[in-house]
Length: 125
Image (tube, rainbow, N blue to C red; front, side, top):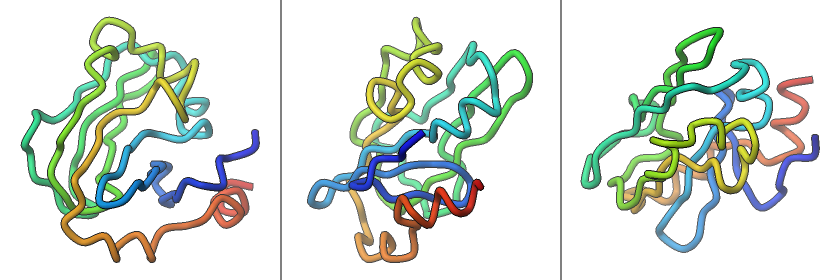
């Protein structure tokens, strides 16, 4: 799998696509493959304020329940409500349609601490 070079990544296997002061967040292809078939996704409510490294949600699969951590600090301004009825989208399209939330960033400079695609690929190798 080639990871999108325009994204940034965490060592906990979240990805971030930053556009201005907003960031779309999801879990990586590696994370969904390790989890197996996703059967439920729990996401925060709109307006929830999260801190970098804090709890953002939960992804439940047939094998495990995994916490999703906020890769950056901000306010939840969108949630992927399609995942309520189709959680398997996280498996099918982890870097596109399987996104989890969008954040309005409170500290955009925190992104400087995230991994680029090459560093993430080295991390999971």
